[in-house]
Image 1 (cartoon, rainbow, N blue to C red):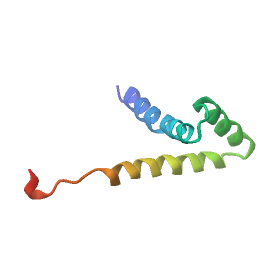
Image 2 (cartoon, rainbow, N blue to C red):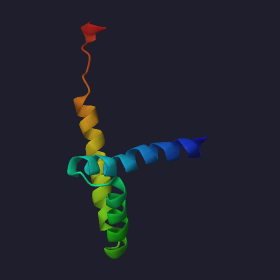
Image 3 (cartoon, rainbow, N blue to C red):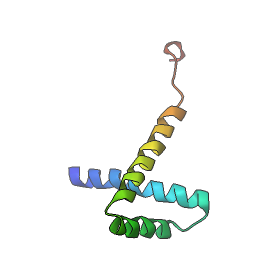
Length: 74
């Protein structure tokens, strides 16, 4: 069970980056994923670092956008 949960979390965060970039630019998600894979092989992993930074940034934007309830709004 923990392995399936880990896989689900990784798929949501990792594949979400390519989907978001693809939607903004108007390019297929599959092409963006292939681009990251090929450039990772050619440059020995530097696009993976950029990819992880983008994933982190997207998650931080979600946390910032969430509305926090005040104590007296309960």
